Length: 115
Image (cartoon, rainbow, N blue to C red; front, side, top):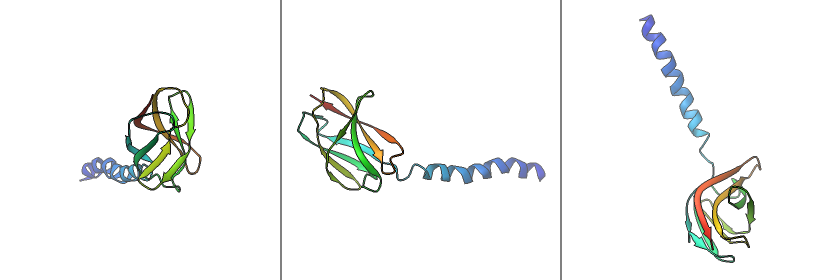
């Protein structure tokens, strides 16, 4: 009986820790698509997301991994951001968010190709 209790202790602790760790990721901004995925300077782009209202996201950037270029947001709701492509050199750019508390920039897996 004592052995069974000792064996179950780590499993019980894990069951308590994992939900808490997973909930840390809830509420983080997350993008699922960019439309269109190829654009030119001045074009309007729609980004489909989760948790991107103004209480979660302060600023939007296009990043090539070296340079982060801030973009002007035209519309922002909890599940969508609409912006105009700034004057930047052609290339592949990831969407990145500055969190509302300005503590971190969260780079997204979606890519916008600028021609």
